Length: 112
Length: 113
Image (tube, rainbow over all chains, first blue to last red; front, side):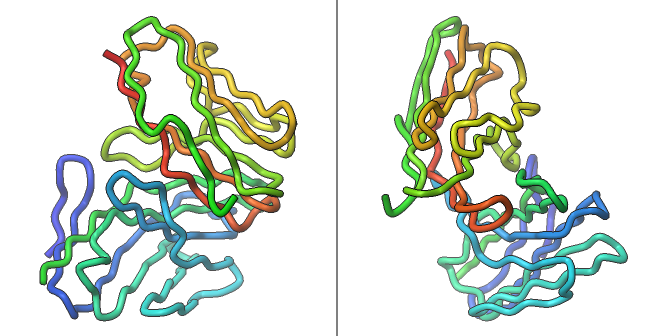
């Protein structure tokens, strides 16, 4: 289930389940979005990105959905594995700018 | 190099001490960014370089923070007279262009005691 921890919302799933992590962004002028995975003691690692002229993009076991109407982004992970346990951040970029703005993050815990 | 390299990995500083954090970006990457990440939070933007030019420093929290990239490759983030609230992980990222291909380093964890 999903719960709000002291700092980060946490999503706990069983190995093999599909996971969905959600993110809301605030600026309707954002035109590029990235999902990052961050493991303890490491920097954010690129997972998948999407431009604002698309509403869906698929990678290996991951899919990103973009709903510009409600300024919502989601990351779907198929057949979640224990190695997927990490904190996941969405980040967005305004058109014409170079600086990413990160969301608050969601901790994904995968039980074997 | 193969990735973005940051040093030191950990730094403990006494309050009031000056520190310098180093970032070696991916070779040939034009853009370089510094972010600050507090415990349990997402990274927050500090400053941005394109080659040696510091194009945006709007995220630097005070004039105690200073960043440079004199030859357009290695960058140093300097914090003067460190305070406890400066304790965080400082992340460096580089990209080949203006709005794609961001790669992050593992960060420097600064603890001010």
